[in-house]
Length: 113
Length: 113
Image (tube, rainbow over all chains, first blue to last red; front, side):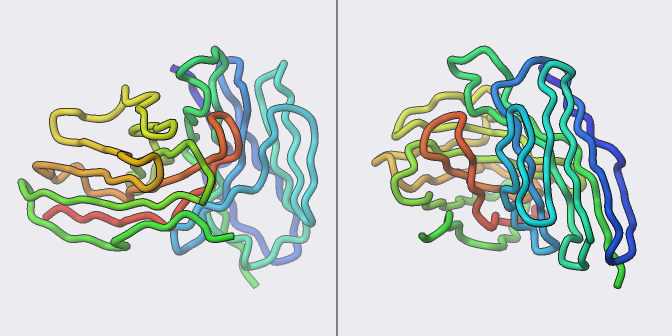
C-alpha cells in the first residue's frame, strides 16, 4: 500500500516562531488532508488540499502532487498550536479506494510560552 | 451544525469480554468511517460505509470485530472477544460523499486489561 512519511517527528518551538512540517507519499493520490490532533485527542481538519496552496489565518499548506509531497506552514506559533499534526492521503484508483485515508505517523509539536 | 457524536468516551474491560461503540455522524453525511488509533500512531481505517452498505472492510479483523449501519445513519462497532492489543482509541468520522473532507468525532478510548 501507499507509504506516508512525515518529518520532523518532533518539534519544539518558542511562542512566536514559524515552522514547516513535511509530508512525503509514495504514490499518486486523489486527495490529501492535514489534521491537528489536540491534547484531548480531537482530530480537527485543517486543509483538504490535493494540489496547490491554501491559507487559513496563520496556517497555510502547499501540495505538489507531481513530486509527491505536501508542506504545512505555521506562522507566529501559539501554545494552542501544540499537539500532533497528521497528513493523510487517499490513494488514486477510484472505486473502493476513494475516501480510504492512510495516515502518516504525525509530527508532535510543542509550543512553549 | 452538530459534529460527529460518539459514546462512550472511555471504556475499560477485561480481555475476552465484549464491547460496543456507537457513532452518530453529521446530519446528511452518507459516508461513515471507523478508525483505530493505537498510542503513538496515526489512525488506521477499519471500515467504510456508504449509506447502509459496506464499501471497504479489508482492514477489519473480522474474526472479532463487526460493524453495522442498519438505517444509514448511526453506526455500531463491536469487539468480541477483546484482546489486549485492542487497547486503542476508536474514532468515527463522516463525510458527505467518499473522498470529501472527513470530520472526526471525539473518539472512544478502550483499555483492555
